[in-house]
Image 1 (cartoon, rainbow, N blue to C red):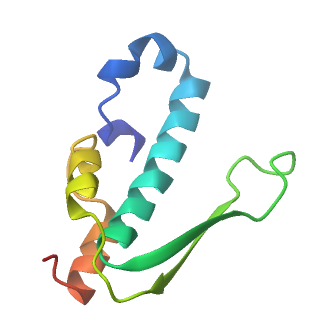
Image 2 (image 1 turned 180 degrees about the vertical axis):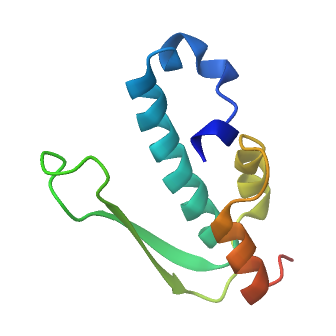
Length: 98
């Protein structure tokens, strides 16, 4: 995923690979959350392990709430990546965007 993100607005930051990796992790989880919310899921984001133990410790928990979320906001975010997220492909098989 990290090679598909448009980092051009962040060049001064991401020239250091550790920052690029962390930014891509945050953007990926944020995009996943937005994709779920756009389809009417209520999403909670939980840090389930201390960041001292592992840097990748975010869990997304989603429950179908019924009402459709803000698909325009998600579409704007999706422009940051080239192609479709694997989660997006999966969600398309479950639901059709309005």
